[in-house]
Length: 150
Length: 264
Image 1 (cartoon, each protein chain N blue to C red):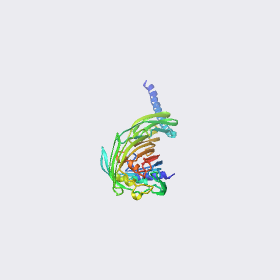
Image 2 (image 1 turned 30 degrees about the vertical axis):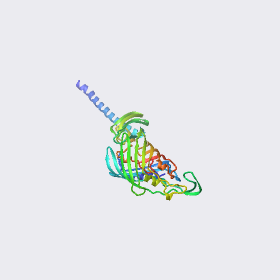
Image 3 (image 1 turned 60 degrees about the horizontal axis):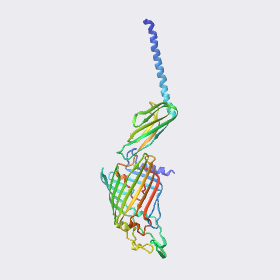
Image 4 (image 1 turned 135 degrees about the horizontal axis):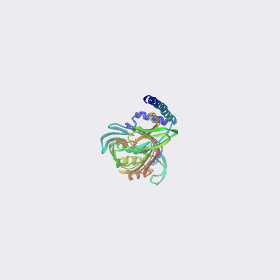
């Protein structure tokens, strides 16, 4: 019984190993191809607003950012932000996407699109932080000269 | 058309390569647009405003702000006290005047023969004083007092200004109100008519002290951190001592400006 059952088991292991290797071999080019495809798709990214206005540095600038993107063809994309390491959201085989992000802005940063597991940014939009008033009160002086109208 | 970007690049280079959100010691600004300020002086033209240049530098204690030189004495959470040297602003109205012959005096009386109506010369005055700046959720307040240090008019002045800023996602709106006291010596130097300057067309006049009231409105629509669309309007009601002078033809000074502004 042992002699008769061993060859099929060995064959099954070899077959499973071959299948696994084949699968890995097939997947690696597939992932690489997806990243390459995503780069070729050159998606467009839109963020609103691109400016966060705060009264002064001591006051937080909390804003809801509406983000949407489009691509000519479906692909795998991840939306990221300089503010965190992990992607905000990922899409598979999608040609468009939307995401809302509520965040407290403390400095300029970028939202960007990239292929999954690829650090290269396909497109990015910069969000700027503007303080209306400086912590230095002298900068708020209203100059008295006649030409100063602003 | 390349002049403006080149000029802005030069200004940025002068200001140094500050980090994105760090505040540079320099504040440089340029606004281009259309606007004007009325001139209350007789035989004068309105002052066109096509460009508004903003050049300021703020050090630890010393600062330069568009012609004003300052030294910060105190900087506390409750307020900032500065010593300031500045140029008096009344003289600017005397820069664009005409001389002409009239047969009606400024009081409306007919003259027997044409008489030369010449606006008297006035000099710039350097004033020194102190200012107190305070701000908070309630708005911004500035109190200042200055005295002539150049021996030009020998007078003094005091200013009180209050403003509050409303803001939205891309805009800000800042209404303000201010009162400007001018002593009799200051008012009389610029707006009085001395016996040697008087003629049948321009009677002698002694101006007293008074308070000018001013209301202002500044609006901005921000395109980016450095660029914005800006508009402003000011209305300053002259005090009676100045408004009654034969040198003035208007009761108020009105100004407006609208354009695009860049600030670094």
